[in-house]
Length: 385
Image (cartoon, rainbow, N blue to C red):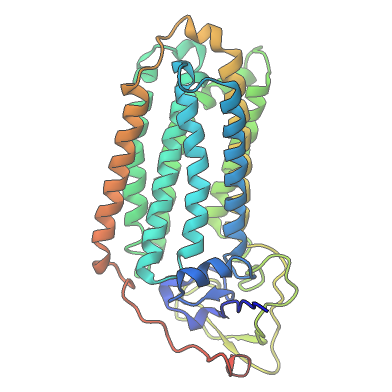
């Protein structure tokens, strides 16, 4: 009978600091996992399991939507749909890249950096896909053929380079200056989001303060922006795990797996806050509180909100593309290959070059060549932990 042995998991003080997550005290995978162990770990409860599946499953939902639309829309011969095609491809790419990054990020410190470099690049390209769709179908009536409209997509392509470069760089000061790292990474994604949504902000403001028709597109954009704001809040705040480190490591678990013991809080390093990278817990056997994770941490909720926001965004774009088609085609020339696939191709190559440059610089990144601390043996795991 074929049996598969699931990989061992560890607590925060048993893995190198580069693998630590704020407020997450348990459920870490081995920092030198093999590719097979990484795949197998997606079928056991770790602090990454929900992160993996909340973007892997939506990937196939978006692929299914793309295939259904391909059967009814002529993406090859109809230039009007080319911006939509680019957007759909990038909507399928970003959750898949995120799922892969969370799956294989425990192979080594170097692999962790590279995985998230690719994740950031996919998100940057997704922001460009949003600009393609908004520029083609969602631009306010008064702005069509205006200066902003003409340069909207080229500027978004430049923004994707800024986003990828800044977010990749943010991993370098992560250990020495974690707050700076967080600010840089947050700014890297807030900036293109605000730029891409300028047309939506204007349209929604105009609808709230005038008698414009309230249609499904406007409602979809409202839901999209609502979930986008929730996504940004969860990413920046690390709530709820920051309030109770260790309580939100897993989801749906009454006890941490792998014989995790009762834990005691150690005195933190001066200046550290609960849940920060300088906060640790130690094993204990008496007089302590037990950790019983029962709900998901912020990154899991972040993934869910991001996917829901993308779903509503897709529905709103499809409504605009259908309902405004005749009006837009009467005022705009048909999209050309250089302005659509040419721009997207150059953006892809540019982002790949940025990722390659930061990958080449990894030997100078703090923590990229760390060795994992000693970990318990299989035979003594529950006793030593």
